[in-house]
Amino acid sequence: QVQLVESGGGLVQAGGSLRLSCAASGPTFSRYGMGWFRQAPGKEREFVAAITWSGVNTYYADSVNGRFTISRDNAKNTLNLQMSSLKPEDTAVYYCAGGSRTFPNFRASRSYDLWGQGTQVTVSS
Image (cartoon, rainbow, N blue to C red; front, top):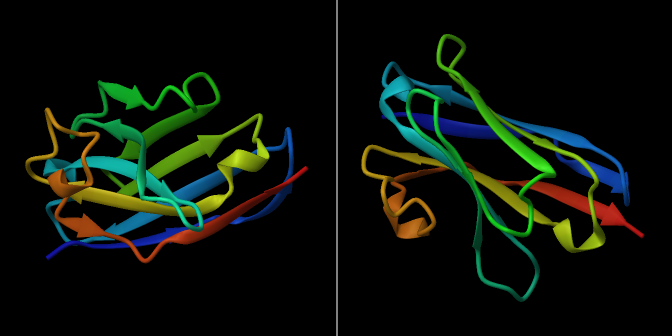
């Protein structure tokens, strides 16, 4: 069973950058489609970005497209989310997620079997 552990969250000023990482244990990481979701206080969890098992195809929510970049390194069992031009509305707990059947419904949290514990990102204005 693959386990996911996020890191890299923190406090940053608006316009700044952060890089989130997700370390996966287990030998099957490279078979999984992966994604990032986020949940702000009082709001539902929302899709942020997704990447296919090979890393060739990436997808983004409109709200982060052009500012965030998802990537993966299957040799190192890691998933990354590079976030730039951060806005206060990006403040949330960010979760990495994975599964064997994430596509084509990669925007739906129910498509993912595995979840990390989350890491807090706070963007001050």
